[in-house]
Amino acid sequence: MSLQADYLIPINFGLSEERKMMIDMLKKFKEKECPKDKIAEWDEEQHFPVDVWKKLGNEGILGACFPEEYGGTGGNIIDETLITEEISNSFSAMGLAYLTGVCFGGMSILHYGTEEQKQKYLPPLIAGDTNFCLSLTEPGGGTDILGALKSRAVEQPDGSFICNGTKIYTTGMHVADTIVLIVRTDDVEGKPAKGLTIFLVDRENPGKQETDGRLLNQPFSKGITYNKIMKLGSHILASFEVSYEDVKLTKQQILGKRGSGWYDLLATLNNERIVCAAICVGLAQGCLEEANQYAMEREAFGKPIGQFQAIQHQLADMATEIELSRLITYKAAWMQASNPTDMANGVIASMAKMYTSDAAFRCTDRAMRILAGAGFTMEYHIQRYYRDIRQLVFAPITNEMSRSFIGQVMLGQKKSY
Ligand SMILES: Cc1cc2nc3c(=O)[nH]c(=O)nc-3n(C[C@H](O)[C@H](O)[C@H](O)COP(=O)(O)OP(=O)(O)OC[C@H]3O[C@@H](n4cnc5c(N)ncnc54)[C@H](O)[C@@H]3O)c2cc1C
Image: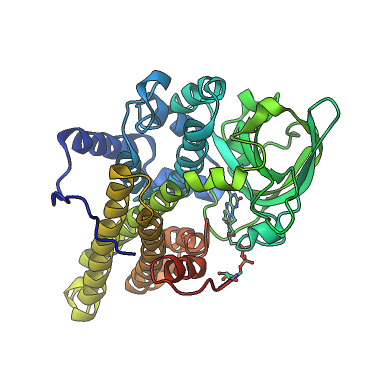
């Protein structure tokens, strides 16, 4: 397989006036609504600012990639990429909320939801009144998800389903109104990818209106209980272990086709990888800006440390890797937007996710060395970048599996797992 597109590539690295205006607007929005000191406070309090989500909706940012008939502005994955990159420059946890809400929840409904589901879920998402979370991974493991997935929804004589099982790392559940839940409904001998079904589970949480994003100790829908997972980074968007006990689900809650949940998920996978890469590009860029500024101000031996070649080279390496990250991410977004069914899109989207997360990981390490002691304190922002990037090298897919996928699909090697 070649990543050389066989259609004409008009080489143009500039952005349209509309897209430049969108990014300028986002920069101003961030300064006003979520300056870095506020983000540091929310990180310490483990608080997700739902009012900022709502304001992103008011500004039209959440609807940038949805058709106008649902309240969007008709953009595509390139807009999703630019938005996520800009937000994640200072606020990668909000980039993650955008990933699960818009790119995963909203786009899945747009691609394979019924018209009724689109009407019900998309306008409130676009307005910033609601969000989604994804409940797929189970305690048995995320990489071998088909082997580990034990949760089941069993059909009842009246056509409804009763669901039981445990999920782990369901992120943003406390600020999502709808859980996108993937469970087994059918067994197909020797074919674990078949028989999975996606359900849209609305949380019935009477206390919802009272929350401003802090964790509530109220029960979710009947039969759904959760435990918050203490984690190293992305404190602003909490993750949960969730137990589903005799939860009643209806046929109307099925998203896509019964039994083909795995294949439906694949339809939005490239977008997810690309948006994930955009989070990494933004995060790395923000980290470089912090380190560069510090190197101009901090003095040693009578001059700014940025004047030492060793420091300049670290900064130059960061800048170069970020530029390469941006190029592969934009190319992946452009290929996906130009020809969504091209099989090569999956490869370049995986490369982008893998390369950008590894590169951003290295950038946070270099920045930490440049700031030295200051970087290790909670007074500076670098420690947050350093903590927040770590999950992106293994979630939503591990970089080991991304490499295996590239080896198999692009290079024709035998499947390694
Ligand atoms: C903060 C956070 C947020 C998350 N958010 C969500 C969410 O919202 N919803 C959700 O459903 N899930 C979520 N996840 C889960 C995430 O997708 C998984 O963590 C990820 O898929 C990896 O699974 P695992 O952690 O179980 O690692 P494992 O699958 O146990 O893997 C452990 C190690 O073994 C390696 N490995 C396994 N098999 C192979 C192989 N064949 N070849 C080479 N190496 C291999 C892996 O690459 C990894 O290094 C989140 C996770 C985290 C930490």
